[in-house]
Image 1: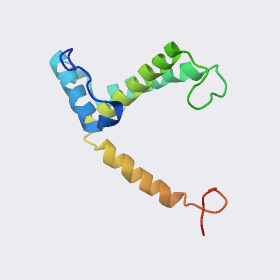
Image 2: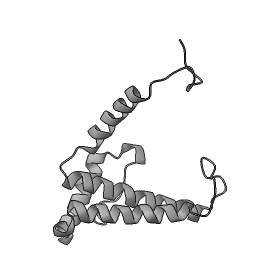
Image 3: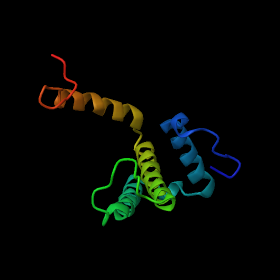
Length: 126
């Protein structure tokens, strides 16, 4: 994550593995690994979620795509969302969990828990 690692990939090309590896290197070269316990990362994550919440706190409902937001507001949102994502990836890493696999497994569980029915899906075909 040093300046020599210019972000050359598009967002859809970035994997959780790459984020995990770059975050681990970022912390390692700064000697921060000692501070990255699961508890500390979780508390940092909660703090970042709070900062993300502040962005929406007094806006009421917001339209998809944020059509009425300024470029600066969107950039601020991107930064806070990124902070949340990065702490989540780090937390999963220090806990020894495969976040991508866990997320896919959760989607499958949710599909079983909340099946498609004629009453909840406009595209239901029986």
